[in-house]
Image 1 (tube, one colour):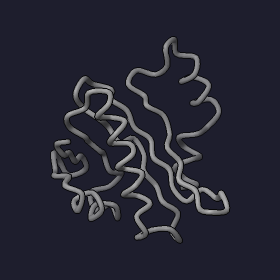
Image 2: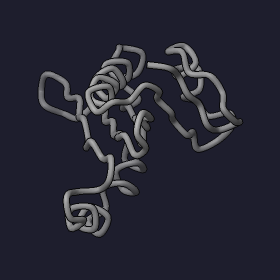
Image 3: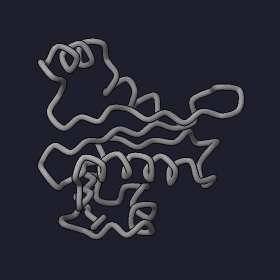
Image 4: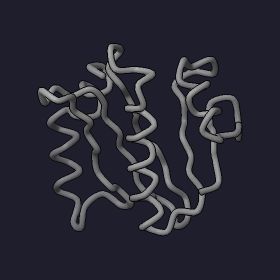
Length: 122
């Protein structure tokens, strides 16, 4: 999560997105999961950059919170948002072909478009 946050939440990037008139095209924002003490245990970001196509831009769960449904809940919430903006398909691009998140996405119905790009029908 720290790597994701440092890359995606850098102040210059956030400032640039905020300054786009009307917001970034298709951007639906961040979702954050916390534990009972308020500590962040997971984050997800997504949007609908192309009509009908939802895109998972980022999904990360803290190592101590994995395999407890946090990622599934974040993806479900992001999916609901994407559907409400007209998405009929959902895509994700993984950083590597053998990415550790691949079993998570295949379990949830994603199929390969290419070695790193995966999709599912909503």
